[in-house]
Length: 355
Image (tube, rainbow, N blue to C red; front, side, top):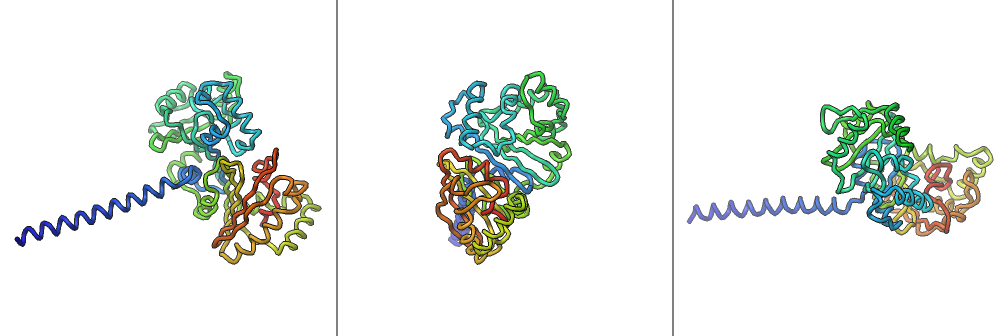
């Protein structure tokens, strides 16, 4: 009887342990299932100052692109033109090479899930998520046929170079991007990585992947995005600053910022086009008090003149809800008909984003 109680006790402990493991796995699965493609893309990129994201699967849905766009050059061209007109593709580093990619490389924006451009001080990286029907072995064979030097390992760097990409482009009569010079295939993650530098791409593969933690909050606020720009604070305070404007516009901006109550430097910044074609701007700050002050000031600035851009921001969008939650400020923007808000305001000077 005593031995039976021991066995039962051990079994109970094992059941509890298994339930605990299942709970941890379940929570992990639930959290991962709720992560956006933008967040997943950043996990697969290298640390950088600026990220530009395009959800090609979402763009195709938004534009009602048929499933055969991957093999139909005319449909691909129409998709690119319509995407440009809809202000959904300006973040892409591959848009200009899309037709060459389709014809020679075996993948393109017509069948990619998404694309992320990461720009760091020491290099440029493109990460592209391959569609589920893409055969990575076929892509490797295509690279070899194009003249790329096969790496020693399957996940190593395929070496092409400037002359090879120029030759492929000339032979095809199509445009090739410098970021296609060096390629790495990641079958496990289902992505292809490219760069204009073999040394940088090798360093990325050998290093730790993932975006800086400082952008986590603004990426979360961006949510599901068809197109997005994500900046570290240092880059945002340079790329979007009013210092890029001429002296007259700088003087006007200084006066407007003072009247609005002043602004603080941002820790991170994101602008995203949502599936409903509205936009969200997210800025993070050191603490909740700074966020509340900046929410008030930047709401005033976003509803007024746009020195350095011309006219007023109200010519481009209607300002919706503005909120401050802990250290995060969020502004909702509803573009006016025909306005290209994302492509116009993802680079500076942008008064309501200035530091």
